[in-house]
Image (cartoon, rainbow, N blue to C red; front, side, top):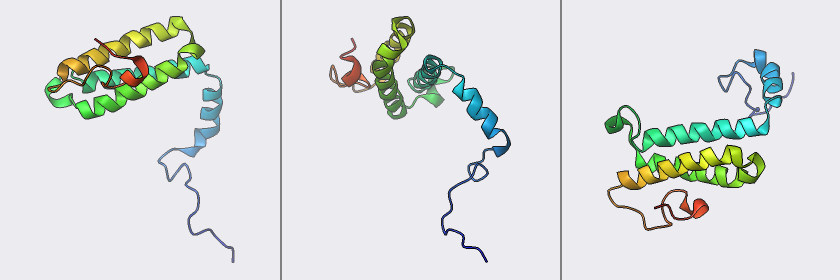
Length: 128
């Protein structure tokens, strides 16, 4: 008889991930430069924020300003923190995209935030 823990750690199967390629996936991600990972995450946040502020094909169904606020604030934190690490040539387009969704959020809001209080503005400063 063996003792098993009452709350064993989750496995890849528990998480819905096929564990057969986990070593291969870990090696693949290890080969990806940090700049590429940061840019990929930022672009995903930017794309999701754009959809949530109503810049997608079906704004009536997809706009969700509460979700957009979270995404924009997260994007602003990432871009601000990573800017010195990824260099200006990578940070500039991310800042431009961030500013665009911040402005779109401001336009979509029925009750605008005070200057400097909009999503991500604690990291970027006021967006006009």
